View 1: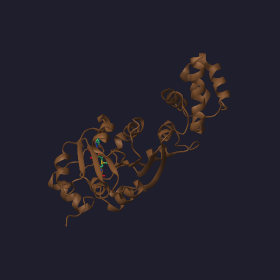
View 2: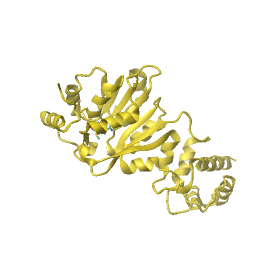
View 3: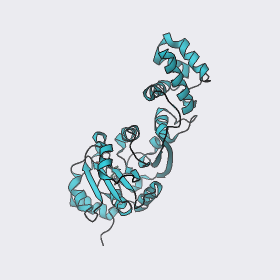
View 4: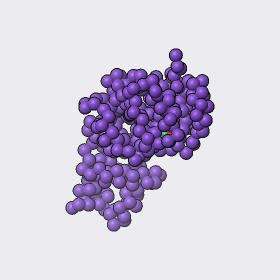
Amino acid sequence: MIKDIATPIRTRAILEKYKFSFKKSLGQNFLIDLNILNRILNAAGVTDQVGAIEIGPGIGALTEQLAKRADKVVTFEIDQRLLPVLKDTLSPYDNIKVIHSDVLKADVKQVIGEEFKEGQDIMVVANLPYYVTTPILMKLLEEKLPIKRIVVMIQKEVAERIAAKPGSKDYGSLSIAAQYYAEAETVFTVPKTVFVPQPNVESAVLRLTIRNEPPVQVDDESFFFEVIRASFAQRRKTLFNNLSHHFGKDYKEQIERVLTAAEVDPKRRGETLSIEEFAKISNEMKRILNS
Ligand code: SAM
């Protein structure tokens, strides 16, 4: 019987067979630990009803385990050199579609419509290339795709920032951007030893459970995110100073009125504000700017 791809011996054999050289610039760190893969699949709750989307299959370590458990797997790989490898390693499975594409440029919504069954539970499960973690996650969230959950291996530091709560040092615009679309939690951390080659940073598995509705009512989403980015522009400055700097000193009086109406002390710093408070401030600010 052929061994699973995600073992040190089989991975080494595949890499040697294809004389594969890792491209650091593509974030190529392959998983060689079945136990970690099983924990990722458990965290995602993958069943035989699920349609799975993977980003970056590499030589197919996670793809294979997804194919064994899910109904179907669609996976996006940017590196052309991996296509013949995947054709070989994934040949025992008939429920995998490999798409040769940069996921950032792909029309994921269209792919979902074409490749999965109507009404099927769809999940993204991936060991992401770390150099593009945030753009990939924000694309998946902002495009409001019909997906239920995203479970991804990413840098531990980024996972902590995404899942951070107000008042913690990791809390910032990325936490709010992600938590506007999803409930975020770090499920477990992962040692460097389960990858070849080993990455320079610590890793963690992040679970994003997509919300049906945003947790707050926001009148203008892009303005809401503009206010948030402005509030964190200089972390050591007060909310009032950051907002005045962003909107210009002519607006100081209006900002004071907005903060009073939103019942937020102007001396607070952005990192202490809840998503509800940011929603109140941005709705109020928009109303005053439009009046
Ligand atoms: N899933 C494999 C595993 O766990 O062993 C490989 C994971 S490796 C961390 C990331 C993979 O993403 C690599 O195969 C890399 O070539 C691919 N990749 C990098 N940038 C990509 C992009 N923009 N779109 C699609 N795939 C990408």
